[in-house]
Image 1 (cartoon, rainbow, N blue to C red):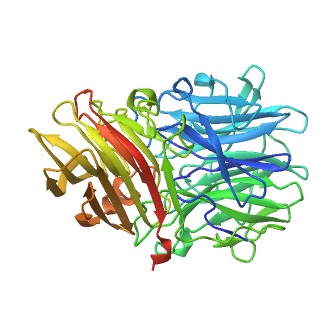
Image 2 (image 1 turned 90 degrees about the vertical axis):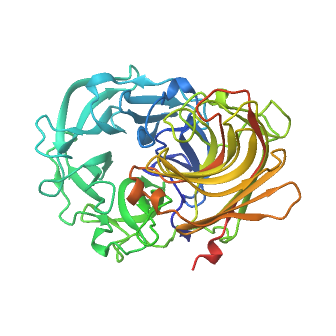
Length: 520
């Protein structure tokens, strides 16, 4: 049995493929860098991140983009010894493909498809005769309302990386006046071509639809039992909501599964973003049935032959920085990571530079973070700061976007050095707690999150920890309040607060601990 979700935290828009006896899974990253984490598994249950597909600035220009722009809905496919990743860089760069022989990388530079590949959510399908097809979503030529879109297909040459022939619109949604038919994937089974796509938007009304045809170009008929998966009928208080955007995979032994995104709100508010879940799929009368007998996502999924490790509540992760590379789960915002951090400036630390950009900007701040993965958790870090000018700061942050986040920071203003907790709501800062006249050479910060509330603790030197801000309301960081497609991340940061300086902060450790055993 495997426990859902299989990837906890901000891992939306999952796509999966099988290559031999291994499975590979990717997710959207929007404006975080590097882009598109890639996970490997032998059993669909236990996943290990083996790298990031878009790990060079040249592959993923993100400068100036909002948190919920950037890399949307990647699809991964494997054919004849080669891996293909197709995705969209929104809003300006459009759809592109990268390839690799080794899924751990390196991956190629982007092959941009240009204006011919309109819309978002592209996917590739390799037919039995060796031909390749592009399938994607785009607005209709004369849309009647917001979200009036269609699914379209066109021949694609994987050697030249160009679309060929004419594009054909094949579907425009199952429901009357359907909104946002998107995230399409194309498959072949038992003489039928199947198109799986999402519908209803990526929030509460999200759903999974399927259609089939004997001919790849259609006409397609929709499954009479659509949607084949949704939770919208279960109500807004159900523990798992917003289910949709699925991708199918067969395990090589005739067993089928779907990876799909969903949310786990707390009291109606979602901090974790959209996570990746797994479901069993069986076939009846030539149609896929998701979790037959249940008709919804289940807490656990039975996988034949899988004997998974026991769940370990209270697990912790301790990161030190003695090597010459960062763990693959660490992310920064937008591009030019080399400008904002260094692993070689001083042994055993990661140095974050106090550049002009801050977490309030759409810039490239010195912010090094991992995803929030639990409703109840604590994160802590130890660091020293070197201020070379006024208005520098460094510390730890919980970030949903540049407009909505919480910062605990050591700062210098008017010759004074202190620690303060600031909450940004809709771009406006409010100071929630402050401690004056501290020693910046040895600072420890801890953030404890309990569902929708948080506390911040601080310590300098060998003094006892102090509670700096208590019972912080985190609802402004939720998807429901802040909007967008991302979940929260937590990590270390430094900034010159609008001015490039020579200041910096050296972080020696970062810890994240799951407190789910207290989640009651």
